[in-house]
Image (cartoon, one colour):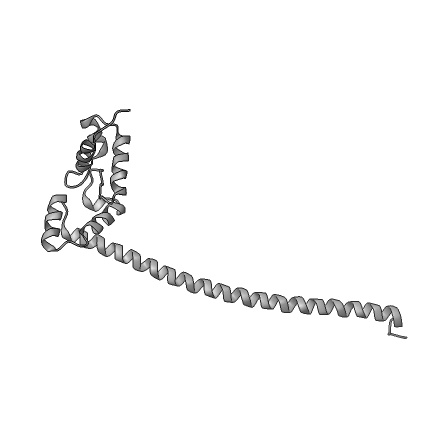
Length: 165
């Protein structure tokens, strides 16, 4: 297994990042490193919080993870810094705004779903309690009916049928 210097790895990962956004397969052919190794390096860079599409696609076709990482990277940037960042990555500020809004909408819908789920759980618990109470009531009524039948049998056995002709 060959070892690569950190500088070499960093330069290769930079080629996978915007604006070059070179596909892994083409990069593997050019530099002579297996595409599996390049994919591992890309995943390590993503783990460090870098947006590394590495698929040669236009920004609108990047993965949700890469778009989210771009939103995180640009969150604290002012207008001039954002413009410079966008030029260096080959993307538009409007695209970042769209991605940020998509993240917010996704989180809002998750919160709504969570709230609705909590309401459903409460309703199901209430229904379960009501059913348990009804079951206990019916079990008591059944036990009482069984006891009455048993007493009736015993009374008939002791005093007779009770219906005389």
